[in-house]
Length: 400
Image (cartoon, rainbow, N blue to C red; front, side, top):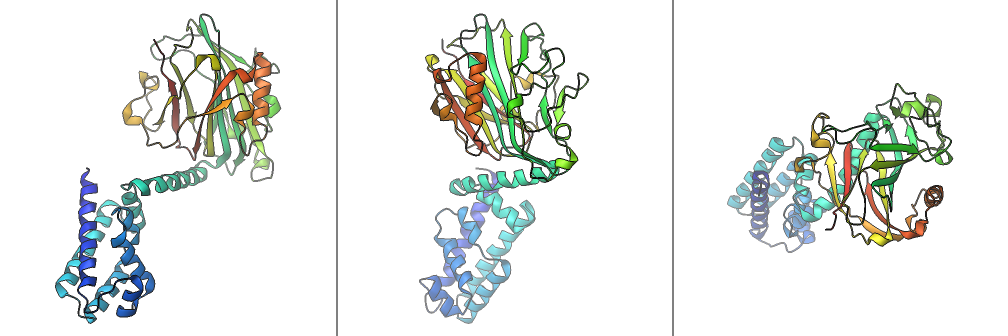
């Protein structure tokens, strides 16, 4: 148990016990919030909070019911008038003073402190988890000046690659909005090689799935049929694409729906893939989005189970000259509640609410690569208001 948790628990237990003692010492006992309201002539909301505070079994969850300092003093003052024990009143007042000392020491204000304590509760942390991720999304949307309703990252692992591994990757943003200029990168061309030089230009081949992209000059592998933004190519001297490139100022704040999808076929030569291979797929999140969707299509003949999932903070990873990018550490791992689901087989089971063209796009992609989508199992994870910046990793361990 952390020192913070232990100290908070001790204070809450003392405050709860002392309040109960004050009420019990009244000449006329108060068995309910209504009876306490009538007897002490106090606000019914104050009485309701007091009873909820000491009747809620989870002491950390009960913190939300502790009344404010002024209201609490009103309760003690009225209790004194009704001849409650002065010893218990002093004890309760001291406990409340100590409670506010904790607020000042750890958080600075009551709402921030309540949130920290809520995180100590199993039940409360689940609710706080969703609410605070949404709050982070709203803050990041303001700070970056852009957002999207959905980001999807879809990978199709091709079977029978011989001595190589082939993956078709798609990345899309749906309903992008640019509020003002901001540092949002939508696509970054992968760099050849890695820090220990085990990957080279000869080993990794990338080819745009859309034949309308000129192989000689393509930097951004757009899947044009599903883009409603300007499909500009910033040129060979710049290997990344930003919101500023595809969204002009005239489009900012308009009713125009901006979608962007990229897709490419990546071949890892010399890396044989079969049903015993370990699969590790990662996705970096850099845009504030309401929903992040990761879909993975794997041949049904491989009989893969559910993968392990990890989410890492990219705020901690900043040294590109080390192997940390390839071997993330536990210190970077973020708390995470979402689960990977096996949602079925084929493109139609992968329908995405709010993106009616998604499953048709998947069918189109399988048609382009000459495979039957109904022969593939679909694994999906949905993350509302994902951490930013972060990396989501799915890992299927190989079998011997």
